[in-house]
Image 1 (spheres, one colour):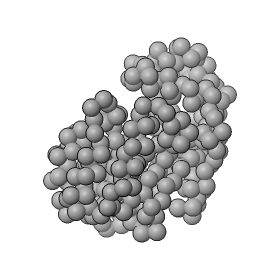
Image 2 (tube, rainbow, N blue to C red; image 1 turned 60 degrees about the horizontal axis):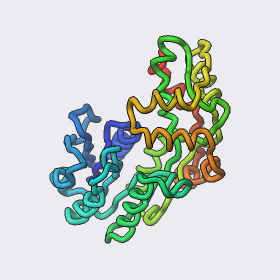
Image 3 (cartoon, rainbow, N blue to C red; image 1 turned 180 degrees about the vertical axis):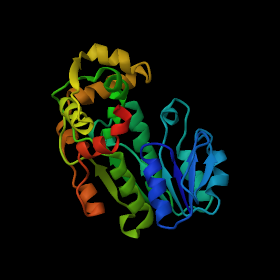
Image 4 (tube, helix red, strand yellow; image 1 turned 90 degrees about the horizontal axis):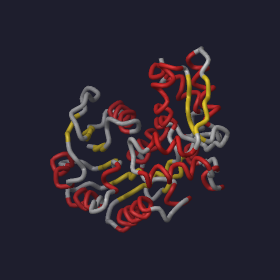
Length: 279
């Protein structure tokens, strides 16, 4: 059996579906009750209390570990999840980390994530580590303004990074969970090209078949909007990356191609598949 945490999110949902389609037994874990594919067991659990994972992990041989933001809060100890998994008989863990542990290693959350990576490496488990950059699905932040005003409002309109389709992260995660050859792999996951917010707006417009205007926000305007849903420190951190990506953050990684045998999907593909969110 394979356990997927964060099973109702942008990565966990397609990963759960892909694993179920292989005929494996899958347990989907999320904080709240949710619909899952036929044949998949669902367990509602808060990962902030690793002990509650024990029933979900009963009989599991592999675990996909995706941490929610609160597990990076002061006092949280996500390493306990790895210890609970190992004690429960799990043999393999695939950890969703972040490219930031390499590109900007000194932020508080990235120091914590690097420590978690080290805990996993030093465990007795088989492991693989995924380090994605920015997600294509972050464009959903613009969905309401596109629906109501036909506008994308974002800072740094002509500064791009190689954002990745979460479905590609899920596909790489599935391969790492199912294939022994990825044991000990550390994969940096990006999209196929650097793309700017202005170009993303153009791709959304093309998917809709209607014009979408781009409005460039100042950094202060963007931070004010972002801090409604995230700590100010994280907003500043994100804006630093979006406004001044360093060479490592601009690099297009070959790792999706290496694992899947195909190129990562471009943003336009993500926009076409998710166009209903913008209508």
